[in-house]
Length: 542
Image 1 (tube, rainbow, N blue to C red):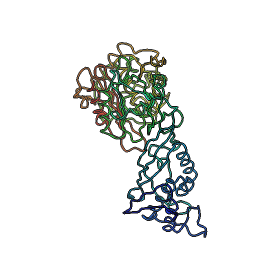
Image 2 (cartoon, rainbow, N blue to C red):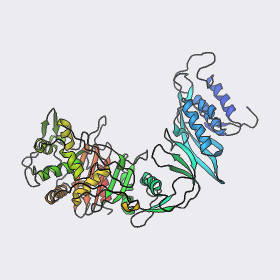
Image 3 (cartoon, rainbow, N blue to C red):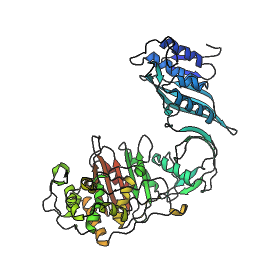
Image 4 (cartoon, one colour):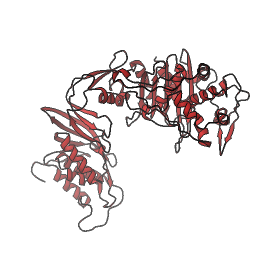
């Protein structure tokens, strides 16, 4: 070991410091494994097999961290199972982040996973700022050599990194923004963590125009049009102010609501204006699924289907609509939940109880395979290229025939929606006219908002609201969830079957006075059981 090198290994916890540790760690790794970091051993010895041992885990992690700390990307990469990708990423890390004095401290391994803490100083343009963060690595056995290797991914360098992303220091990014709600209350990631992707996009799109000046930052550089994510501020810029349509009180309720279930999303909209009052997600990946997701929405789609049938005069709220336990359409049999049926029930009751067969039986009478998609687009604004102010998906109801067309009538098959889309559908049902959802006013950047080609007629609008009111009361499927919500209220439940998923996704849509909301919870069963209480709690914050 060269002069000055120090390696401490105590109870499975070790520290490596740049400037003399690497070769010692390298030698220790050789001593444990009896090999080298080359692809094959020099003497052509047999490939190792079996689980990675504790000694191999510790030595491999130590060797990798030591080489990284001393700035030798090639040596560090050789400790991984993907040296080419690792060396490229490490070189970028060491050049683009402007780091110095790198130290790495590893904790006690948990099996073959080793947590570690990196501390360094980032220097740029006269600014010097300490930088400390935690990450982890896992040691696996190399497929070709059988030697222990760090299982490589960009997240080893920093947990915020995904493959294809990099860290860099920049002083040319968009200025920071101070995002405020409709009443001027500041919206921060610390208080409203679900807003991170929204606030990042607001900064990217409106930071410069909002009058701010950029600072110097260490960021995760995203792929394509994805907004950069700030990890460390070296020098503060001056933020510009961006006013949103969000409501801090409703947003707080949405943040609290989604914490009840993993993989859940909720959106709230003001029906009379289309202004988005809240958006929240509970996801480990931080993705804004509430705006960008694409999934079958289950029976919440019956809001659109009912509007179509009402407009065509095929049903009326107070007319009998057959609801047998099952019905066959072409080569597929459709059933109601648990095979229930309703004898002599009105369409209002069939809607309130979410009777699938009452809708399927009327498809041939519609006599237009594209009718549902037209209704969704022309009346509810689905697929009209929404410009909300941040990236969003505006839904899709493609033209289908036979069994797929029938599945669409009850929100299955190829219908693709997210919480934003269904909240907008609910808002349209409440207002009687589509108002394109927005998270920042159109006047901020003079963008053109989507307009639906037509509005539903007055009779259809009134009956549709009555159908939803019946669902939120009495024996309707949304009554239990909406029991504690006051005012003029209506609802629709939904359960969407997903291939290879044990339980259906839970969907719920509802309005109360001038607020509409929709939620989806992955693999949570019936709409009223999981998504329903989320929506109700958000509506109660109005």
